[in-house]
Image (tube, rainbow, N blue to C red):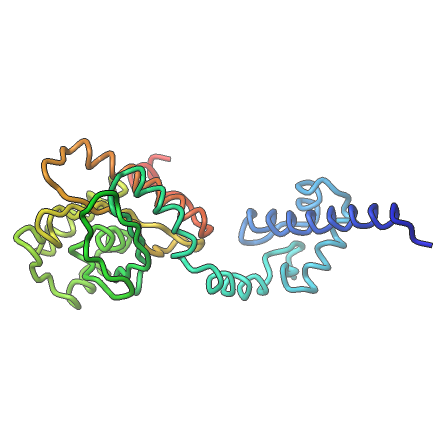
Length: 274
C-alpha cells in the first residue's frame, strides 16, 4: 500500500530529477560547440556517471540533447529550436519590455519607447509617456526612418558599413529638419561614436526642439533585436545630462537583452581590450 509519506518522498525525488535534467541542459549549453563528455557532465552535475547517463539518454529521447556521435559527448538537441520559436511567439517583446520602459520613464522623466528591428528599420511597439502635459506623436506599429531617430541609429550602429550603406541607399537621407544628417560619411562617423558610447543620440534630427537617446538590445544569437529610447524637449539640456540619459537607456537595453537570452553590450574597444 502506498502511503502519503511514500508519495511525498517520490514527489521530492521527482522534483530533484527534473531539476537535475534542466541543469544538465544548461551545462551543455554553457559548454563548447563540440559538446561535453559524460565525465564532464557528471562532474559538473555532481552525480554518478550512471545517473548522469540515465538523464542524458532521457533528454536525447525527447530531443533536448543530442548524442554527438562519433565524438563521445552531448550537444543541445533540435527540440530546443522549436521551443525557442514558440517562446518568441508567446512572449512578445512589448510585453517583456513594458515594466522596463515604465521604470526608464520614471527614472528619466521622459517618454520611453521600445522598437523592434524590422530588417534594420525601427518599428515602435510600445510607449510610456513621461510626466507633464507634453505628449509626443509617436504612432506604433509602423516602420520609421532609421537614420533620423535615436532608436533607428542605435539599430544601424549594430550593422557593418556595407549594411548601413545599403539601408541608406534604400531610404535616401532626406532631411527631416535642419539638423538631420544627410551625408553618409557623417552618418557613419556618428554611428561609430554611438558604438563607442553604447547609445545613439537624435539631436533635433527628426523633430525641431526634440532630443532622443536610444540604445540597441540583442537576442540570444547576438543579433540586434531592437532598441529602447527616451524622448524629451531639448531646451538647454547640458552634455552631462545627455550622457546620464545614455547610461540609463543603455542599462535598460541591457536588461532587455538579458531577458531575451542575450548579453549586455560591450563597446568594441573594451571587447578588444579584454
